[in-house]
Amino acid sequence: MKIISVNISKPKTLRINGVDKKTGIFKKQVPEIYLGTSDVVGDSVMNRKHHGGPEKACFIFSTDHYDYWKQKYPDLEWEWGMFGENLSVEGWDESKIRIGDTFIVGDAKVQVSSPRIPCNYLAQKFKDKFMIGSYLNYVSPGTYLRVLQEGVVRANDVFECIETQKSNMTVLEVYELLVPKKKSKEGFEKAMKTPLLSPEFKKSLSKKH
Image (cartoon, rainbow, N blue to C red; front, side, top):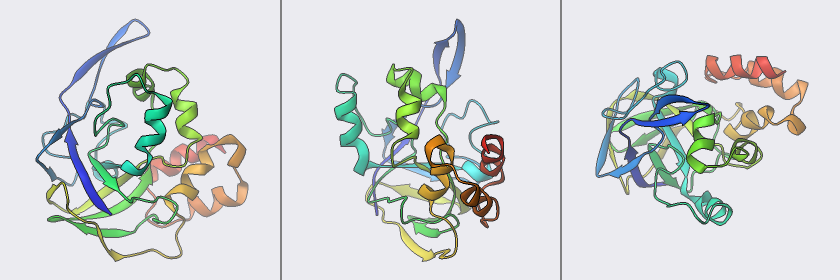
């Protein structure tokens, strides 16, 4: 699993339902970024109730899925960071990566905390009010990381797994519990008992089950 691009953003204002709101979802490629324990240094985190903090210090999206979305939205101006990710990573497979898996990448040590729950800013960026439904039903949600050891990361840095939580659910298994047709009582109960799954994600799950 290799980093293809590292990305941060400056604040941008979107008009949503007649109200101006600032967002940091419009990421741009940069030479390197510093992963801090509560956010990526220099990145814009506008709503700290839902973004940033120890459980969401960094966001990954797999470059393996860009072709699918490019075909779905061919008229958009495509670039790395399109999904608001700090790290665009080749080979990041959420059907195999488990909650709590720990990696060394660049100078940092990171740990998987939860899948991403898409928000309305993503729909606004893609100029499609149905984007959230499409995103929820796709197989790659993106992944939030805890930063256990701060450090610089760059394009071409490789993720080295140093500890895997073999008994934990995968990122995708947890994420699919948000999709109505894939909900299950057994899956929900297992997720709520999954060590190292972020408390915020567990809270979101409990509201939907």
